[in-house]
Image 1 (cartoon, rainbow, N blue to C red):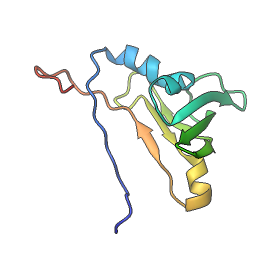
Image 2 (tube, rainbow, N blue to C red):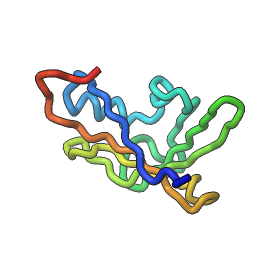
Image 3 (tube, helix red, strand yellow):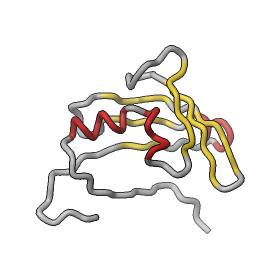
Image 4 (cartoon, rainbow, N blue to C red):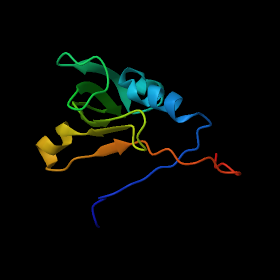
Length: 113
């Protein structure tokens, strides 16, 4: 079996880029949308998304729970990739990193739901 090295999920959200960025950039709201993330808070003096800012996430999948301390590597509300975090916790035990990124697409005439 080959290891998963890349994955992608797409979802159409009918909102302008600034609204969407505001929602995703506020990591404290992540538990509202993720079934695995049970809590998120900014750490090390960070109060919002900025390059180098860190946050603590608590994750849970069935009986397995783990902490995570991602680092924001890009934060530009006007960019096509408004928020990008690197999973520092995964790198410490597996040598791998995971990233999440939001890529707004132009509206289409037939959105996928």
